[in-house]
Image (cartoon, rainbow, N blue to C red):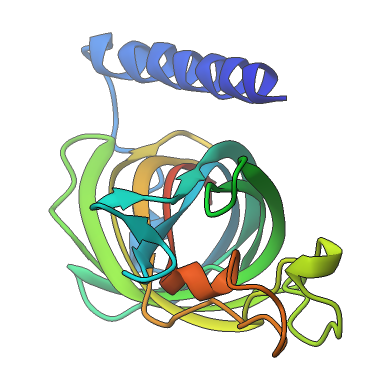
Length: 239
């Protein structure tokens, strides 16, 4: 799956690059879709390749031994998709809401016993970022921008209400989460649509760990003081 996703987005990026080169090689090029910048509202969709990970702060008693971390996290690549809603504020600022689904799988390795124990944590996030975008003036058919904002993230596979815990092989995390995001990219204008490749980082505010039940040995969640999502994405937007 990882190789297929990387190849797919590589081909998309290559195609976008060739289209862009064709635009800027044309001496008679014209500014395209000028009217789109003046719309009060516009809509679109996006696809993204993501890498989700956890930022861990370990408990010094159960999660560390002689300054060695006994819990390790391993990120994986996956994908997501969503919708775009844009509201124009003025010539240089837009307000965006981009609700989407992010499909995620991460690995946590607990070396808190005599042998390594691995938990594969699957998550499906309903990610709702609201971002303020600032962009420069257009240069022919391109325009760079940067954006930042806040995310509300609902983990549909959190297991937060499960009665079982790690003793039965169930890893639990919080359902409702909050984060901030920062993004930068370049908007390219074509005759029929606007294509935007961008890079985004998302970083959770809240602690996502749900403690194991009383009586469960302290091999698992007791070893983790704080667990927060962090994600990096390559995004392709179509408007």
